[in-house]
Image (cartoon, rainbow, N blue to C red):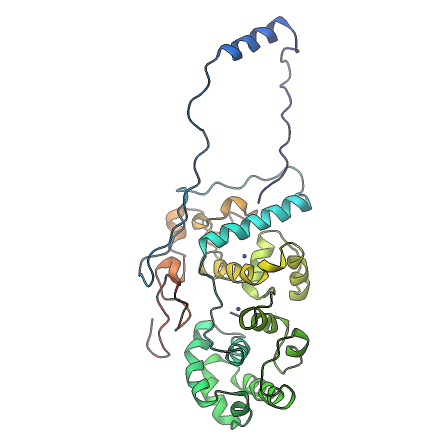
Length: 333
């Protein structure tokens, strides 16, 4: 679909070579001086700036308040332990929850069948293009029974803007017929049943289960896989192996929203070819900081959707979405 804490143990400092041994007159003199020195006033730790968003439907970019230039994460001298990685990963998720409290599936849908169809159509295209196509599709074929009886050529013509329309039409006809014949015209709520439908794999099944049935699941699309590898949470490339390793890091209750937050971040800031590192609110937690543009002002120019002041992907976004809705097909941005 186009449907996410650095706690390494500190290393104790060793006394520099040539320092006075404990108990020597020199050492005692230094200790006395330390005792006489007045206590420093004020905290030296900067307060964490609040993350804020603009009002709904504002044309202004949505930003997370942060220092003018994110610090480059320290490179650990030793490999990160499993415990430290898990803590860092969970902190990343908490930080993204503050940046994207409105994260959601970016496909428009009103019921499980519409979400299932939209997710199948989203392969090899954008959620925006799918959202611009499905209003006419569901007006013509609102139920599995209607879509199963569709004339293939007419169905192909409607979904043509999403690309690969012949293959997708075959999948839609097949899954609609299977829903009609094997599941009483209803989308099943188990992954074992969903993956038996034509054109439906684990990714699509997890999208439907997580967002239409409330069943937690990790959705490993291209954005999710890219980011968890950049964060060094996994080295796996196979989506099912990525899913298994990430599921082991986070509580099950976080799986669905972690997926949304990670995908949101990948689409808006952590791009594939040129991530906006200088505008990234989790830069201090990212071991790949520096792969993209680190200058804050230049990085801001790379932000997309509501973060850059542009329309989102949904024509009918949730009420708490702070950006502008996407335009209908043919209306332009």
